[in-house]
Length: 256
Image (cartoon, rainbow, N blue to C red; front, top):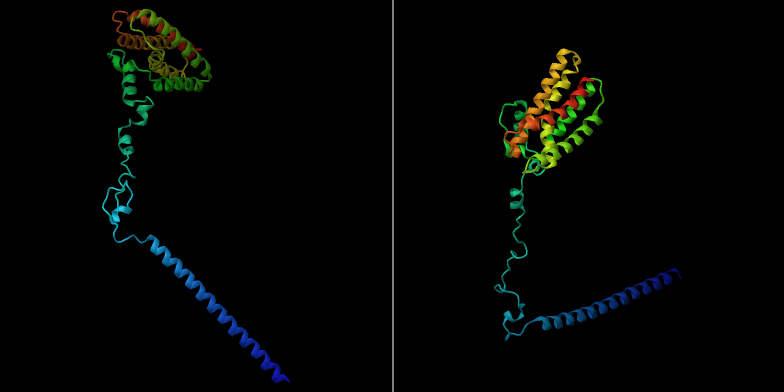
């Protein structure tokens, strides 16, 4: 009985394998015939006729030769960004910061007898004035006087009053930025005076003489620049008087 059972199992397994192989073979043949027929039809459809030239199948906008790659110059135009970057001015020049002009203005203020260049002085450069105002407030703070608010407030109000006065005195006219720039640069001698106040008191005779000298220095420098920029020859003393009053307020902050 055991031999008969093994024989039946072997028989059914062999029949199953044979049937499965035959079915797979027929399926693969059918799929191959179907795929081959479709490929043949697609080839026949896409294959051009021998009587039609290949140029007929090219698009109308194609201007090149057949069987040759077209040029991509139209798709990648030459960019002019590199030339634009070369022609752009430096960043400091765009911000209005010119160290050469700042140095020339500083030397003009430090030397009251030096002639002023009106083309350079007639600029709204506020880099130097802001630095000198901060330096004045810092030196007053080192002397034990926190007067930043007074420095900024008197600077703004004084520039506004002098701007109005200079527009009334001159026919050319001047902008508020130019007035603020000139008065701010001429504040440099006052910074020197406040630096001296850190080490000794200015309430004696020597201090009073130093204060008067600094006020005269600042007012003469500012008036010289104003008459050069506004073409106000022969009116330096008239311009120097309100400038002396303006710088006298900062001198009072330095002394007391």
